[in-house]
Image (cartoon, rainbow, N blue to C red; front, side, top):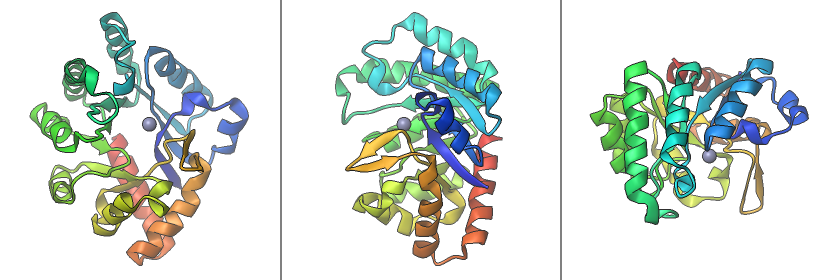
Length: 235
Ligand SMILES: [Zn+2]
């Protein structure tokens, strides 16, 4: 089966979600409301694994009580995300981001939940935090971080996700070229418009073809590897 390890499922309508039924999807959230919505849609769509979280971009609007509420419902979810740190687009709230991220790491470690991480300009920082909390299952979403961190990510048994934007984003493309296939999982980050490219789970098939070409691997073999990685990530 095709897999989408990072999709804002709560943002899609029912008809669109119907059209994604043959794809295994991690539905990430950005706040309490979208976390609840993910839990709800996962009841109607068993192919969707509901994650709960607070996006680092939203932390100027999210109060402590809301974070507490998200932490409470996390036990009913399949995992935690989209959480993390962003020093590029929301540097102002970085102290708050670090505090909240650590709370999520603590819970992920206690409850053995997988984490879906946004780490823009904070790749190593996030890596150091998750390892310090001994979080067992981690995905660094849309990885554009340092090449030399890939080996450490692999040795922890963590994963990175590759986005369809790999065809137009040189940095991401060089990551795909260098990373071992056993740490790769596909993602869409949909619904999102990236430089005119409309991202959604239906883009995954084409993405698989791109990865197969870059890695010079038979498509069916690659599908088995990536689906296996997805399942190990989810636990
Ligand atoms: Zn996202």
